[in-house]
Length: 415
Image (tube, rainbow, N blue to C red; front, side, top):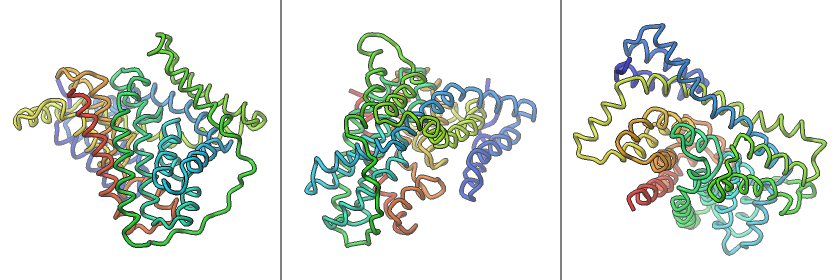
C-alpha cells in the first residue's frame, strides 16, 4: 500500500524543478522537494523523513561505484589519454569526414568512461581547430559533439548506466550492449543533422586555444586503460567470470596511469577524478530522496491506470518515464535514476524484461536532458563559447537524436 498521494509526489517534483531553475543546488532542491512532497502527500514528518532516508540509502551502491569510476575518468583526462584518443580518431578519418570524426571521437571518449559533458569539453579544442580549417559552423560542431556524446553515453559505464543497472538489478555490461543499435542510430542521425547545420549560415567559430601536445601519450598507451575495463567487464558474458565495475573501472584507471608514465602523479590524478564525480554522487543522494517519495506514492499506479485507459502497452512507461524525469531534472543521470527507482518494479511486474526496461528508460533519458535549468546545457555551450540564445536553438536537434535512440531501443525490444 502506498504512503503518499500522487498530488504530493507531483508537487514535490515541481518544487524541485522550480528550485533547480532558480539555480538552487540540484541536490538540495531534490531533498526539499521530497520533504514538501511527502508532507503534502499525507505521510507525516516522521514517515516522510524515513522514506527519504530509505530512498537515499538505495543509492549507496551506485554512489560507491560512481566514486571509484572517478579514478578512470581522472586518469583519462589528466594523462591526456582522452584527448589523444579523440585526436587520433579525427586525424585518421580526415577532414572530408570531419563531422563524423568529431561525433565518433566524442562517442568513444564518453563510451570508455568519461562523462558526456567532459567528453564534449575534451574534444572541443580539436573540433574547433578542424572546424575552422574546413569551414564548419559552430552549431554543427557542437551538435556533432553532443550527439556523439549521447550515443556514447548509453554505451558507457557512466553514472546513468550504473544507476539503471543497479535499479533493475541487471549486469552493467549487458545493459551497455543492449543499447548498441540505438547508439549507432543516434550517431547516424547526429552526422546527418550536423551536416544540415553546417550549410545553414556561417556562425562564428571561437579562436582555437593552444594545447600542450608534447605531454600526450601515444595512442595505445592512451587506450590501454579503457581496453582493460572492456576486457574485465566482458569476462562475465564471455566466460561467466563476474568482475564488478567497482573493481574494473578503477583498475582501468590505474593501468592508464601506469602505462602513460604518470605513476608519480597517482594521488593528484585520483583526487582530480574524485572532484569530477563528487558532484554527481551528491546529486544521486538527493535524487534518491525524491525517488523514495515517488516510489512510495500512488503516482506509479495512477500512471499505469492512465496507460491502461489509453490502451497503450505497459512497456511505454519505460521510455516515457525516462523522458519526463530527465526533462524535469535536466540530467540524464537524475532522470534515469528517478525513473528506474520509481517505475522499475512496476515495469517488471507488468512483464517487461528488466534489461529491456532499463535500456528504454536509459535511452528515453537522453531526449530532453539538456534543458537550460541543467549544467549540461551551459557546460557544452561554454565549450565552444556559444551564446545562450544560439545554444537554445540546438535543443530540438538534440531531442531528435535522443528520440532516435529511444525509438530504436523500443524497436529492439519489440523484435
